[in-house]
Image (cartoon, rainbow, N blue to C red; front, side):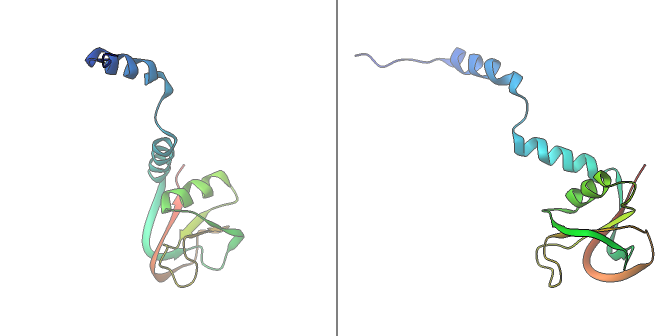
Length: 116
């Protein structure tokens, strides 16, 4: 049997056939996080709303995901703090706060308030 030759037209056909599927789920999730990050004002090395935690600390991969989580719990969530994976207190945790003050220093965290 002779080998089957698939030319450049086959690649074009495959791309055209799958173009309607949209971005891969991971890419879509990353795009959603990036969009959420633009809707949160952030501060490094500070806890905004210290002492006013509510709910359970959620495990999230990034500060944009923490911002998005706070936005989902608005208007109750007024501020959030994300602890990175190497945090000694709350590794990869997002803490939501019912108040946007006081603000205290804490090395390594990223806090923010959801923007309107």
